Amino acid sequence: MGIVSEGFSGRRRGGADLPPGQYVTQDFPVLSAGPTPHIRTEHWEFTVTTETGEVYRWDWAGLLALPAEEITKDIHCVTRWSKFETTWKGVSLDTLLADVETAADFALAHSYGGYTTNLPMDDLLDGQAWIAYEYDHEPVDPEHGGPARLLVPHLYFWKSAKWVRGLVLSDTEDLGFWETAGYHEYGDPWKEQRYAGD
Image (cartoon, rainbow, N blue to C red; front, side, top):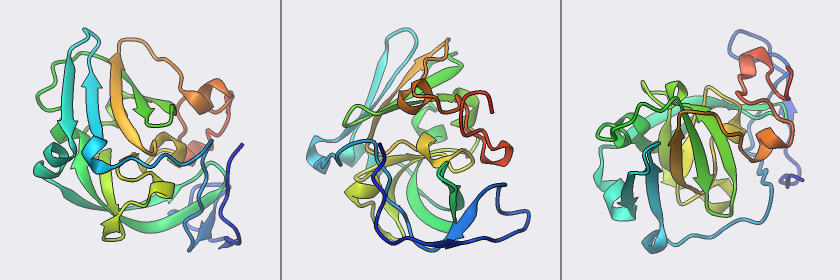
């Protein structure tokens, strides 16, 4: 069951920049499947585990030492709100995976708190995904997934896992938390892939 911030409102807006079935909000609603984890940066780490079991690891200082990008993207929630031109700062998955030896087709993102979500590797590369640690020029708040969250803005926002702690790469697709509960395995907002079978 999701938790939604009080009093957010939106307005409908047509046009090519709004996926079907969505409305525009100026707020940033908070939706989570459970309690908000509070992870201190000195205890945070991000790992990538390949299909062969090799583990690549970054602590907070290691993440911040990598080249960062400022990203401005629209985001779209499966609950039908869209927020335009959100600004983030983070490290591209292209950078993090540059030295990772893998031929995997899929990744399962794991978060502090136990949340998981599945993504094709093709959607994590080529400037499509980041580990974001700033939102609107401030550290990402815990309720929005801080200290760091996955950012995959071309998919519904549940795929941008909050409180991210790692990726497990695989040759086969293992479904994540919401996907096993009936959400679509991919989640393209332009195709309204909200639920399994859409």
